Image (cartoon, rainbow, N blue to C red; front, side):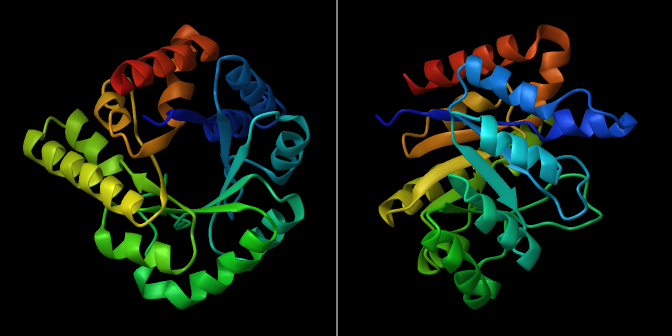
Length: 246
């Protein structure tokens, strides 16, 4: 069975910093702690409004990390220029609305297939692995494959919401869709990642899918770090992922 990687999203360390201004807490320090705790990669979302991660944060991460950086971004010319300047290991294209508190759903690839195909082509030519953040939907997965993405990241938010809101029928339906679409994507030759809203309680069933090779988890880990420290929070997530996988 494929090794399951853990990508730690450090966006919300920057959220806390920006709530007051100044330099603390430092997202770069969080990234280095995550490395030490066993993270296989670091994820950072540079939003158009710079509400958390900043351009300077990306500069520092590119210089200091020894694990891959997964650069999350909207499909805009500005973000494309930044990605082409830095050339991170991976670029994950996500939907972005200015008024949303967090990413609310997967990218609509099928309706924007031509535009997105042209958008990601220079990124691939620059050596970045291109990932598309999408719902567990066959139509979107097929479109991601057609435009030349190498990776998809399945949005696990609906499953996690149903779990925590005690809606078992919805939970089971969402989990089945994730399982089936992970298998479908792998059959197309896509690498399969997953993330959004995962916690200690919800990670096991997703980690058990053999097609999924990476989970990207952030908000929960940063919140848990308040109580138990970041390294311990990550180590516990790693333990639960490995237990589910075995």
